[in-house]
Structure formats: structure tokens, C-alpha cells
Image (cartoon, rainbow, N blue to C red; front, side):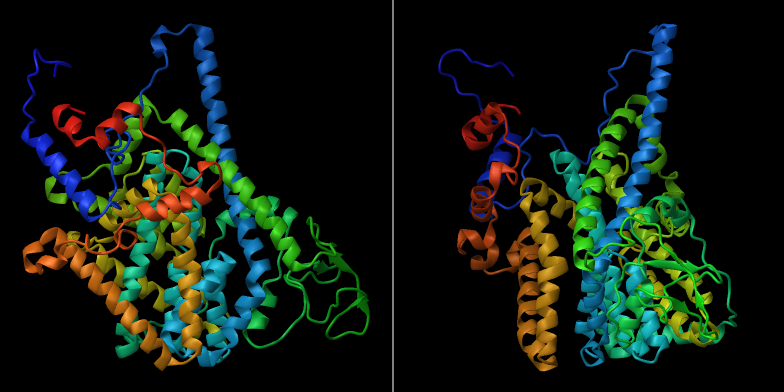
Length: 600
């Protein structure tokens, strides 16, 4: 379109421009919390190819080709090394959270009266998994309590659901490291949010159903009755074999302390392992007959046995568990963020041109028409298999999120991969249950089967029928809002994994009546607002004229703009502020007349 017209002739706006202006004005009158493209009209989900600005291979000299090959080898080594330290930092981060909150986790699990409330059990599962940063540790505590007859199988079901929800916090923390680039952050945060949304939606459906019918408990009993079981071998531990040489030089923990605290055997011992065996007969854990100092006595002998001290950084420290946990937390987060930034930079450097096209085509490819649905189910199986090989769902999901941020994996393909990761981690628990002692095997196996059936039911609910894959559009919209208002990510972490679970736990302590009296109206109000919002977008004629828009409410109740201005003022150095648009773009978005007369 020419930039000027002769005379004072005013150009007639096209229908598309008029419609865009109309929608802009309508959004200003209703809600300004909807995401708006402020950096041009590019779609962050289009997965546009990264331009390859390097010189073609044929035009390079021999020295240039050698330099390119050496650079590629260096980048590959840097990527593998960064990934290794990234996984090790996740392991140390889990140890740090266990040092900070393991005793609290054991004390929480001991209150069997509170655990009889399904909502309280769900909240405890979320809180403990968020504290110790390990779903396997939380589920191991539950298995130990069920095997010791301190917790019934029925009371363990909501805790297992909460463990499944709490494990998604790791991928959310990883996605926040990509907040420097808006489009990368939107894709990465949407990928982490789709996992949490899936878990919460599954809980909202299955928790009331389980409370009313005990469906998962009965299914696990039927599966145990139909199978003839015998103790098996230990589950493979491939990832630990690679990370132990480094992480065991930093810190080693005694997992028996958590178990004994949860099963009612009070102990004041430190969680940091000091003695790793004896010269006579090496032991896997600290013996209960060995004090912090002095000789260690064998059970069937009065002769002292020389103990072998552990050789890690904090083996002989006088610091408390809290101090060591804070040190490890700060160090592991620093290494984690540094490795993640380096991984993203290297991926952006490597995945260009033909390489990017090949990788994206292979990962996001679908089969021809009659078998187009098969690609998602193969991705689901791949996610389950890789999680089983890595022995950690947190590591797998934390590796998927950066790949989504750089645009290698689409949200539609990452969704079945993450669901397969849920199945893979339950398979590990099943093998671990088969390897448990014979007197505890059935109880451990029933808890593992409940975890498996819970995730399988979630897949049947939210993936089997394409129209019911609600986590994908919800996560996409949530990612767009978070990319515009980046402080929403921190609010989501605090509310979803700490404040709301703590509030529900506090109400459950007051009794089921108080919880129902306070939580029931709040849940009903939230559901009503969601229903009205959906009808406003799709069937406004069904609503009264007053409810067809939220404009009659105060602005801070239907828009994030007032909250954004408040947070921006309080946030130092404009860290929470979105990137500013260019002068032309800002002028166009602020002036509807210019928007109608110019093509963006």
C-alpha cells in the first residue's frame, strides 16, 4: 500500500482492518488480560525455520571445513557436557530439598487422622513432592507406610494423586530460565503447564469418583488377584550409574532417616550420611547401632568394627541439615540455570537450516491419512520408554521443555511425550515393588498399580478423544498470558504448589465440615465464572445482557493490567516488564485509526 495519497483523500479501510479494530475496541471494553501480539504479527507456535547464515559447505576452503568440523564437535561436546551437569544439578537440587524439608515431610505423613480426609491426602502429596523434589521418594514413603500397616490403601490413593501433581513443578522451574526471550518463554512455559494442567484435570475427575466408589483400589485388587507374582530383580538404574561419580562427591543422604520418621520411629540423626560401610562387612545405609562418634558394634559381636567414612564434601561437617540444604540449593540452582542457558544457546546454534528442518520433521511428523492418529501414540510409547530408561520423569520433562522453547518440539507432540513419561515412571515403581521383600511386596505393588491406573485413566480421559484434549488449548492460552505478564509464572508456582495447598491443608485440620463450608462455595464460584466465560465466547445469546461481558466489574477483577502496573512498580530494574514494542508498532496498537488505514 502506498504511504501517502493525493490530496486529502482518506483510504477506505478493508473489512479485515475494520474487524481487527472492532475486536481491539471490544477487548478494551471487556478484558485486557487476553494475549496480544506486541512484537509484530508472528505466531510463536508457527515453528518458523531458523535462518542458516553460514557459508555453504561447497564454498569453504579446506581450512574452513576443518574449522567447521571442529566447531561442530566442540558444540556437541559442550551440549553433552551441559546436559550431564544439568542432570547432576537436578539430583543435587533434590537432595537439597530433602535436607530442607524431609523431617517436615515425615511429620506430615505421620498424622493418620488428617490423611483420612481425601482432600488433605491430596494436598499432602503435592506439598511433600514439592518439598523433596522427588516423586519416587514420596511414593516410597507411602509404600513403606502401607506395608507397615500405618496407612490404609484407600487413604494412600489421594496421596498418590498429589504426588503425581507435585512432580510437575520441576519442569515449571526449568521453563522460567528461558524467560529472556518472549517467544521461547511462551513455548517453554506452555510445555511445562500442559503437564500440570493434565494432572489437575485428572485429579478433579478421579478424586470424587475414587471417594465415592474406590474405583482405583478395586482395580488394583483385581489386577493383583489375576496375576501370580514372585519377587523379581531390581529395576535398572542407568542414570544413577552416570551421575553417582559426581553427585556422591558432593553429598550423600541416608534415606532410612526419612522412612523411620514417616513410620513413627523418631530419630534425631542427621540426614547426611557420614559412614558408608565397615571394613568387615560393608553396609548400604548407616547402621542404627552406630553413633555419630566412637566405635561401631556389630549386632552379633562385642568386638568393635572399623567404619569407613563417606568421601563427600559434607561428610565431616558440623553444619546443620538446614545450612547444608541452603548451600546445596543455591549452588544447584546456579549450575542448573547456567547449564540450561548454555543448552538453549547451543541448540539455537546447532539447529539451523537443514538440520532444523530434519529434526523438526522427524519429531513432529504424522503418518499419512488413515494412520494419522498413530504418531501421537508412538510418541506416548517413546516417552514411557525413555523415562523408564532414564529412571526419572523429572529429568525427562526437564529435557523436553528447553527443546520446546527453541521450537524443535511442538506442543501437540510434547503432550503425548509427557503423558508417556507419567506411564514410564509408574513402570519403574512396579519393578521396584516386585524387588521388595516378600512380606511387603503385595502392599507395595498395589500402591504402584494405583499410580499406574491413575495415569492410564487420565490418558483415556484427556487424550483418547481428540476433542477432549483440553490441556493443549488451556496451556497455549496460559503460556500466552504468562509471556505477556511474566510475573504470572511466579504467582502460579506460589499459588498452585504452596499457598493454595497450605490453605486447603489448614482447613482440613479444622475438619471436613469446615473444609466443605469454606471450599465448597469457592469451588462453585470458580466453576460458575468458567462456565459464564465460555458462554461469553461461544454462546453469548444464551446469557442475560448483563452477563455477556465482564465490563461492569471493577477493572482489577477482569483484567491483569492494574496488577501488572503494580508489580512493574515494585519489581526492580523492570525485570517483570514485557519487552517494549517498537515506535511504529506501539503507535499502531494505540491508535485504531492508524490500525485501520495501514497494513501491519
